[in-house]
Length: 346
Image (tube, rainbow, N blue to C red; front, side, top):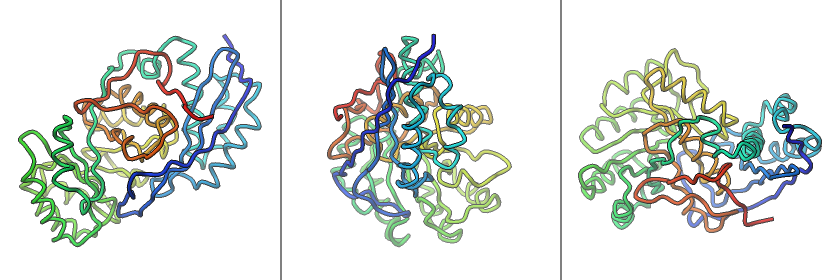
């Protein structure tokens, strides 16, 4: 059955954050983007385009141009083939391509009466484990630690690499003393350190309950990465540096589907990594509810048991719809067809 697109609507938004989001790659206080809404005679599919260049996407201006191209050309095309038709226009705009594919697969999964995760992988689980996102180390308080633990999270993610290494090590040691058995810290340096600093930090972290450390090196290369990984038992994870070719997967990769450019691309990379023995984590960059629902469905399709970075909705002061809410450190995904997202803005 052909799913003919009869309307394409762009709904812009600016979502303020409850507090500044800070990392070694910069700081921001709002998320700006568009809902891409594709309509057929029977249904509506929605994708989220919220570019963030520091995370590896195109600029907001490039995304807007690409979205206007989609809007000008989408009507009249079959939802099953539209991505192929527009592919040449989207090679340099991964966040826009992600939004288009999400909208199309939302439509196609609804047509089949399937959740998005089961449309992608029929055996996908219905529950996704997630980590707490506590923000920059300097702002993390004992109350934040106690609240996250009380909420059932077993992995607490913290941004590091924003202050002097000795200061951060002292802060991490103080926070680690607050953790009950079975709860650990996931750290993200966002490429803040040179090799010497990274070595000192890893040596200082060796006896702490660290679940993983993401992107320790400012300029990663195979030899430096291998040497660092040999210093610690916990995994070092690649995220922003995934574009740098390597001979083999590291112990863990962190995938941002908006930077990779789509659901199926990201799922294929996850499956390839898992087949090679590499752990996989899906993560958002303070996405709106629309993006968060699609990424949660994708995380379920990956079947990765590692807690994913998807408990971020509370960072937004307002949103475009109801976001998936963690309970006891998990997202329970619905059985309704599609991504699970319903907009509250028009």
